[in-house]
Amino acid sequence: MRQKLNNTTFCSAILFADNLAIKYFLLERERERERERERERE
Image (cartoon, rainbow, N blue to C red; front, top):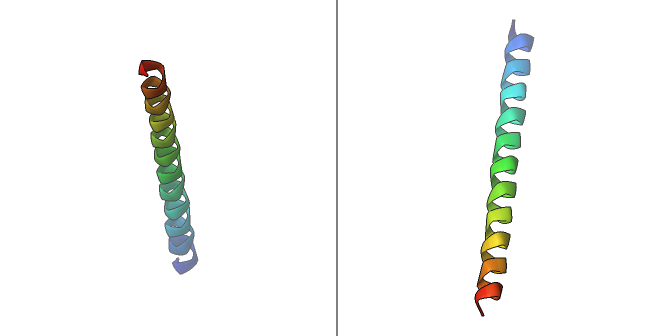
């Protein structure tokens, strides 16, 4: 039982980390687009 609980916690941690990585990646892409727009305005 305890082993199963640890596996579940581990999987949840990995999924959580994956979601954070994806959100960060998308945020970085948005920032890049903003920078491109700023350059075009100049």
